[in-house]
Amino acid sequence: MKTINHKIAAICLSALLASSCSDFLKEDPKGQMTNLESFTEKSDLEGSINALYYQVKMASGYIGVYAPVLMGDDMTSIVSKTNFTDWDQFISNDGNPMMTNSVGSWSCMWNVVKAANYIINGVANTPDVSEDDINFAIAEARFWRAYFYFWMVRCWGPLPIIENSEINPNISASTEEKVYDFLIQDLKFAEENLPEQFTTEPWSINGLNIIASKGAAQATLAQVYLTMAGWPLNKGTEYYAMAAGKAKEVIDAVENGTYYYRLFDEYRKIYSRKYNKNNTEIILGVYFTKDFGGGDGSQAARGLAEIPEETGGFSDMRAEIKFWKDFPAGPRKKAIFGDVYYHNQDQKVVPWFYDNVTNCNNPYYVMYAFANDEVEYDQTKSYSAQADGWSEQTAAFIRLSQVYLWYAEAVGRSGQGDKVKAIELLNTVRRRADGKWDDPSYNFYSSGMSNDELAEAAYNEHGWEIAGYYRGNVATRYHDLRRMNRLKEHFEYRLQNPEIEVTEQWLKENPDKQEMVTGPVYLKERVAMTGTWDDSRMYAPYPSVDTSLFPNLKR
Image 1 (tube, rainbow, N blue to C red):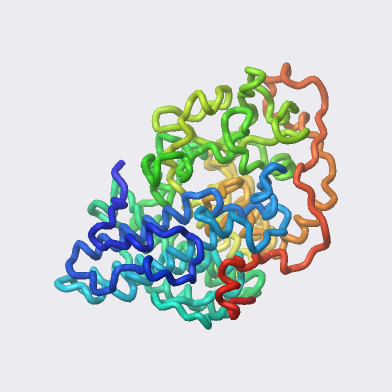
Image 2 (cartoon, rainbow, N blue to C red):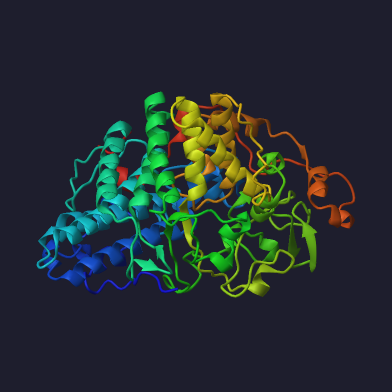
């Protein structure tokens, strides 16, 4: 599938793109963005959006951007990778490379803001274009500016609100509430000015919106309101009701045919190569091409980050044992977690708890992954034997099933909205998860459940629905725990780090693999927690490279 052209010659944001993602605030005379007067013709408008999406890809293609989500209870890393385990242990420091260098979250996200501001401040000067065209370009820019502010405010808390390209050396951080107010206005503008569906290339391919649409803005707003209802703003019932209302707008538009989004009948199709670029479940996605970036494997639209080193991967992301054990068995679990992997050194297929590993005495667990365009990932073969380290994975930021679950949870927590509909949608998601899509009589959840039961059921289902999917930027398991102020509970559990027997559950799910297990296996998490809890652990520090230059940048 053809994707958005990365070429930026038309608008020439070369200075922005050629510089590293580091030092977001530092002004470099040799690295200025092109003068805003460079919007001289309509093609410049399209070029500016291409340039914006290049930065969005840079900020969502690198594994380092996702390191903060390791604080959730579904994922961990391996002990030798301290740049990742620091996040897992809630002790990230202000020089952690996963935050500050060319693959860092703080740095690259601010480059999206820069690219967005370039459009917002310059596109109105473009001659011979309609007001609708101008508003469309501004809406795309404001959407992504809001999206990445939303990501950053939940990681760093108070942030500088930057609306132009001028650098103020006395810049200071606005409160979290002011940041939310700012990004909500951006999202509302996007909602009002983005189309429901794009119909022409390069914005629509295979009948799919491959850039942000009205539905994406509405879905993001639903998650913003859901988040604001919880910790740390704790706005409660009113905002849960607002979240339900905005999610329902998306759901209604799907059901009346305004939006094309549809759930797959099988969960595995979400991550299947066959549907990678024909995924009708994705409301907001970022579409990578295999040659994105330098082509040297350093930039990820790739599958090996979560694969064990023993089979040719990087072992950056691992599943937590308790989360795996508590996860309901069924097709959804099979699609997310790998039961086995091929051990290159021993040349055999082994369970995920096999004990001959490279970095430590405890094994790690395989998460779902992809190979290349031609081959679905085969867990019984070496990763290195079936892929070159790259794939063209579409990053699915928001899926329709998530909106269903946000609606159900928001209805339960607010006591407002269509409860019958909420339970129906909850059961729709679970029906697919359990492989019962074609059985409408299969309702895992009772129509008589209380509001509290509904809310918790939807919260749990969302955790399972997106388990381990670190690319789900706005709503990972980590973000769910954070807004419900449950990270402390997770931290306390990891402090205790009890042994868990894993073979009994594994054999229930893999009765045909009895010969692989010789006895019970007890495991603990490899990455140990230390210290005592403080809410400050839920915030990352500002990178020292910027606080040293801008002393007013403090929480």
